[in-house]
Amino acid sequence: MPVPASFHRFTDRRAAGRALAWRMSHYAERPALQVLALPRGGVPVAYEVARALSAPLDVLLVRKLGVPGQVELAMGAIAESGVRVLNHEIIAELRIPAYVIEDVAALEQVEIERRARSYRGQRPPPELRDKTVIIVDDGLATGATMHAAVDCVRLQHPRWIAVAVPVASKESVQILRSVADDVVAVLVVEPFYALSYWYNDFRQTSDDEVRQLLQAAQADRAVTNHEDT
Image (cartoon, rainbow, N blue to C red):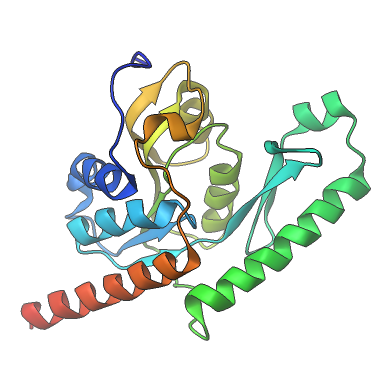
């Protein structure tokens, strides 16, 4: 059941990640776990999930395709593999021509490539075949960006795909359940309002913070692996 809008707010993304990690604890025993974060806001959340599950953390680069002049309104999303998910209802309603979609997608592809260099350097994306993949973001409003992320991962033949977020709209959960193997949300809310409503501190996550958390996750894994040997 959706919770009332007054039910709960998270202190910040790290606190939301710890709450989500508790909900994801049953994944700890799954083989070949891989946690993927949607940058930038999903990385602090995913860091806490990965640490709790002793799983490796990486980023999955997906960008929303915003309607020109209404950038918060998504007409679709694009992933680093080139996968696109389009919101055909929005496109038809606003009569958005194909060349506009192509122009926006080209700009977002440039940003995806920049982030890949910034966050990974020369390191390649993780191999996902036969893995249990948990895709994490800081929330789901429409689900378009996460839909593209799931489609991107599905092409790499994982064993299982779980979507995990602290807060989601009822509609986005229904959409993602049609494409992912599991959808876990601490809060399913109706009405959703804005994502920032569900956080006391919703400051933008910086590129530096993303890099620091990815490095910290690698260090955590190194310590865990050393203790296990």
